[in-house]
Length: 233
Ligand code: ADP
Ligand code: MG
Image 1 (spheres, rainbow, N blue to C red):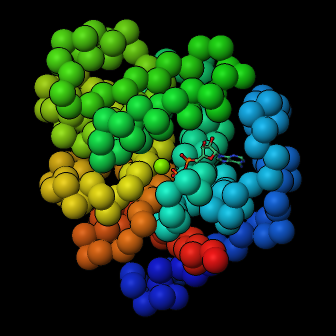
Image 2 (image 1 turned 180 degrees about the vertical axis):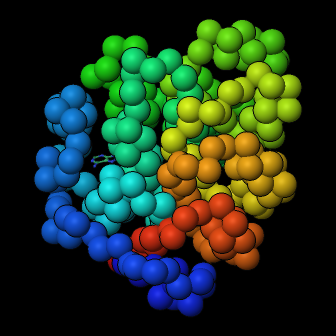
């Protein structure tokens, strides 16, 4: 684990945050709620995947994170657990938002968050992607939600029309950031991030670190910690 400043990629930070649980390998060694721990057990998530073990101590402590790991490494739970930990189910307002490159990925992320959130009765998650008509999405937003998962273009459309209220947001996730940039989403991502409250946690997952990803990190993240997993052979 190396910070981006140690790697010389971003400006040095005042203090490097240490992983407070460096040897944790199982979820119950981490500060997770009893409800989440029992859900993880029911799902058969016995040990943490490497990306989860490296990133959860950092993210559960509230730090921004840039994480690199291959497909199938368990990145969804790596960001879902901190956002669910911070979520107040009794506050019916959007507290977390996940941006994904495609509808398929947004649907997968929604499903995984739903599975992990099942110990709480009434957590409402909305998926907002292009290719669906606006009207039902607007109606759902009027009813309210706790979590939004969507593609940058459609999220931007809703912000433009004032149909998406983000003032209660405390966690923003950019999933597959490099792919979103490949698809030409830089401007919509920047637009969306600028509409999020400044006081938030930002988590970015990316398989590669092209210039655009580093520019996003510099512009929109606070002292991000970096977790990078080497390919395992
Ligand atoms: P990624 O986003 O990195 O491609 P996913 O978050 O979609 O990966 O996870 C891949 C699969 O691994 C999913 O089926 C998920 O349910 C499962 N999974 C995630 N974390 C664990 C874990 N700690 N133990 C067992 N299975 C897990
Ligand atoms: Mg994923």
